[in-house]
Image (cartoon, rainbow, N blue to C red):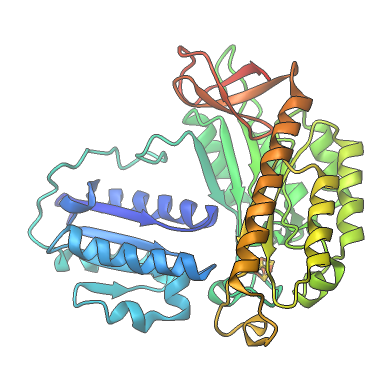
Length: 417
Ligand code: SF4
């Protein structure tokens, strides 16, 4: 295998799963002799795309155009969800563009046929990287592991389940070995990610079983006086949160962060039904109440779509009321975005853009209020926080806080809220 050095840049858009996949591309590129470089000095630029909203797709096209202009001779590989839905748009962007389906990316990088298509090797401005390292080059201290891909649901606004296909879970042994290697390398917070993480099922091992194994097998992989690594659940659909999992969360003493990102999408049962979400507002409320009773320290964050077709003022008020009841510490607000090929895009009762914008801004303001209230409620308590960079850390409950300047990046330190 040709291992002459070449400069590469990986441009990642979208969700945490994409981030983890992009880290995997970097590892494979390092094994082929690649050295991270700025886009302007790269011989190969990979753009890992996103199609979740119209805005994400716009950013994706801009990223590919930017890659083509940043380095005049670089080969540009475009992969990910946007290309699964519409490869031809990207193929038409220039002779230097190659579209590679996400499922083939690992093989494409391992086989290394692309090496012969790279311009003269320059690798200017590149930093050398130990190919064996598991850690990303950009200084991130919280590292993701992808444990699952795809989704068997069919939410009527969503194109991601089309782009990603049916649900597939990685074998538990593989996930555990990756976590053990990260813990040995000193990583103190590992994020479990998936497109529909709660559907994890590898030969009968569900998410709670997987978490139990991860806790056991990494419990002692830390130095004297250090905290063992902890795990954060990326995002979990409300209907997939089992009693068994909640019991584990309550017992794990923070080694599974007492923070769940539970997508709500709407607080109106009628809208949820039209979205084909498999729960109603009452079931969501009951889940939140049960979580708060069993795990009093828990922090809850969420995603909400505002302006779904047919959403009325009352539906929106129901969303605000349920958000207040759930006391979310962060609401990611998405104005509804029409995705061609989805049932919701066909509807004739689309909400006017100005109404969507107004509801989005009101819900973002509510999110700020609720975040401040959650911080106030935690005042005086102590949480372990992951130091992201000197002086800055993120708590178990996912609030950003100041940490001691001398606390090393990547360590877990106690912080008074
Ligand atoms: S749960 Fe719904 S929104 Fe999430 S990926 Fe599956 S179909 Fe899309």
